[in-house]
Every structure is written in structure tokens, then in C-alpha cells.
Length: 355
Image 1 (cartoon, rainbow, N blue to C red):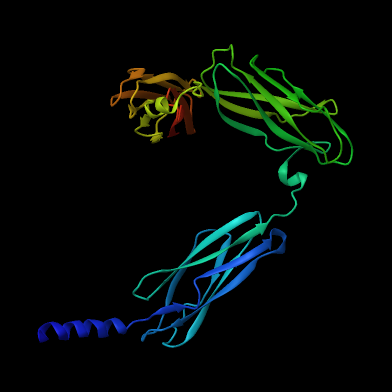
Image 2 (image 1 turned 135 degrees about the horizontal axis):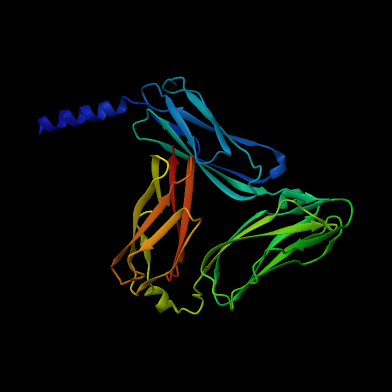
């Protein structure tokens, strides 16, 4: 028995010979704070309850809005120290919770602190909500509209916000030259008073047109009858309409699993045709159908060995990249559209640096 008692007592004694970090609290709730009130801070006080000097190695924060201040000087046993945590509420309205991880020579490992609160947002100005200036006080919420997937066979309406940030009324129009027949763009109101907000309506009529995959469109704005030089870019992807599928059909639906979505050919000589293969597997229950494969330009080509992929099977997509008459960075992609209702459209991108 004595052979076991003495080593265990030695282990206990050795364990006591260490630094021990003990905080008087581990959480702090700032309550309600104003976004316009500037930074707020709190102090977490701690004591070295061990027998060896305590050294803080690092204090990690979960967000750039939170910053710590602390000392790395050794803290003798029985002495107290503090960590100051500062939170910046700028552009962070709403409820927040931030984690602070304190790493030291305390053998128990990192200690977790938490700050929380609610930021009362500042009043939003027209400049905040419509950051892009057009002309004569007219502002727009976005100049590059990425509208995601739209269902085939249906008419869908999307919008982009506009507002008059000037001091005089402004007339708004749309230059629709070059738009496809299936896209109609018009302002909800053609005249905006100072401070008035409205929107540009985009109607995508896919009820008749045979549309698959990604489309890029652009339209111009007119302000007080004058055409504006910078257009509004619009990107949409037309996919199958899955709205009528039941829960059972969704559960049994095909699932497209890709081996990769990206490949970099690295440095390559000019004039070569580069080739890369990607695998598309069906992890679902029903047949996976490749509806459409659309390249971004003539420089990228694609060929798939089968367009119907049975459950558990795999197809090979061969992608080629033409480097003729090119130098520098070459980046191209293609959009694969399938009957996978969860992710019906995925982009595969290939890059190369042409010498």
C-alpha cells in the first residue's frame, strides 16, 4: 500500500506547484448601448490563486470589433490583475455576444470570458442605405445585382432600391436598349421628391422563354432626362422550378456531389489547351440530371460523359482552357445546372497564369 500512497501524494503536491487563474466573474452584459455612443469597455479582474507566478500568453477575441488590453508581466501568487475588453458598436446594431479566450500557464488550459449586450442602431440615412451616387441627388442601393436562382416557367419580380438624397425633385428613367425580351425594367416612380425612397422593378418572364443557367444583363439609368454612363449589372441563374415538390419527393431527390469547384493550373506557356477533370456524383435517391453547362466565355469548354447519373454513380466532367493569345492571369468558369433541388446550380472555376 505504501508504494502507492507516496507517489500519489507526490503528484498532488506537484499539482499544487502551479499558477492558478481565478476571475471574480466570467461574463459581462453591457445591456443596451447606442451605436453612436462610441466604444464601451469592461474590466475582468483575476487573482493568481496558485503557488507559482502567473503569465498570460494571449487573449484571443472572436471578432475584430472586440479588443483586449492586458499585461504579460508575471503575476506573483496572491496578487491580482485585470484584463480590459473594449467593444466597438459601430455598424453592429442588434444583440451581440463575443467570446474572449485567455491562455496562460495555468495547467487547466484556456479560460473563456463572454461579453454581451444590445446595440441600439443609429438612424439610417439615405447615404447609408443607398451608398452609390448616380446623379443630381439620385442614389441606388447596389450597382451589381446578384439575384441568385430563378425558376423556369414562371414570372419573377425583383427590385433594387433608389432614393433622392438631394434637395430638389429628380426624374428617373431606365434605358432598356439591349435588354432581352424576357426582362422588363422600370422605375416604380418616375419622379422622386427630396428624401423620397423608391425602387427599380425587374420583371423576369421565364414563362415562355427556354432559359437555363447564368445570364448577365445590364441596364442604364436616366436622371432628369440625361443618360448616365455607368450601368447597373444584373446576374441571374435560371433553374428548374421545385416549388411543387412534396417533402417525400425532396427527401428522395437527387444530390449532386462535386469532387472540387476550383483548379489552378499554375504557370503555363501561351498557346496550350489545358485540361482538368471533375467528378459529379449522385448522393441522392433519384436520377441526377445535368440540365445545362454554361461557360463564361469561348476560352473554356466542357464535356460530360453522361447527363443522367444514377443513384450512387459518378460522371466525369472534362474542362478545357484555351490559352492562345493570352498572357497574365486567366480566370474562367462554368455553371452546372442539375435537378438537385438543394443546390441546383454550382460554379466550377479554373485559373492559370500564362507566361
